[in-house]
Length: 93
Image (cartoon, rainbow, N blue to C red; front, side, top):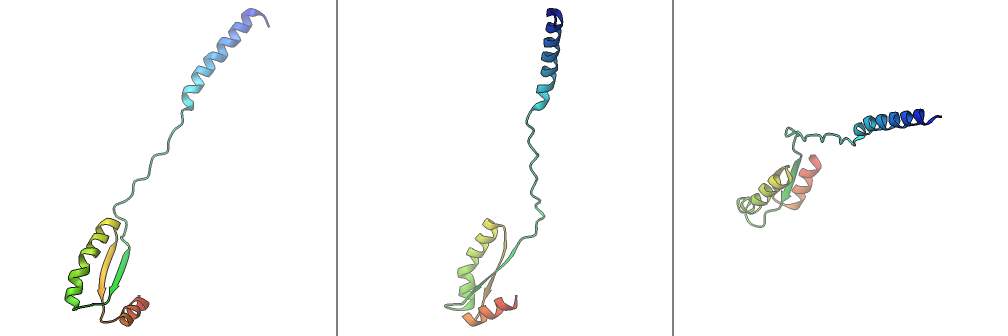
């Protein structure tokens, strides 16, 4: 190869590489948006009243409300008269 062709060849390679490399940037995939329409999971919390059912609800409802908000779930308080009833209700579901 003569000097003139060698220079033209190198110039062509440099030109080609300069055009090719800017298109080789790493492209990140767009992140998927989380749909706010996702159905909340139902969680039943069975409790046995130590006092009356009304007092038990007053005692536990703030915890259930906190769990609903913090964990984005649908928790329901299920006060029962005794522990066996809690287990029976859980088995039915």
